Length: 139
Image (cartoon, rainbow, N blue to C red; front, side, top):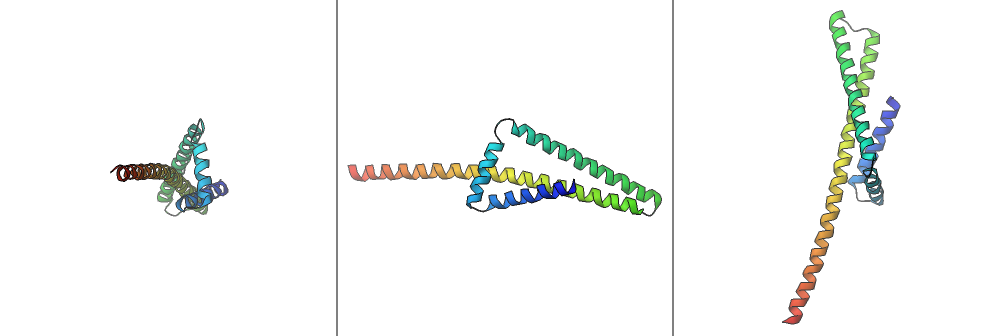
């Protein structure tokens, strides 16, 4: 599972970097996100996010149980140390992945709003030019 989380994290980091800079790759990522947000895929994404939150909570709970064993025994056993480090890595990767998913979603929304504002501003500027020419031509 750790390898899968590293792969997901790398893909999300690449998508975030592509959304931050105005490149042709950004248009592809935005188109992909537009298609992903249509239809039933939003339910799938929410289900995956909820599953990731449950797994994250499970890892945190397991770490808390191991910490209690540390307190009981006085010294951690090597097995507990390995389990603790694995759960800590898993929880960290899941948390980073959920955070990057949120960042990607917000960037996608902001890019869409920016595109809409640019289009409306261009339309207003064209309208202003047309009315300006009409006023100067009629007076």
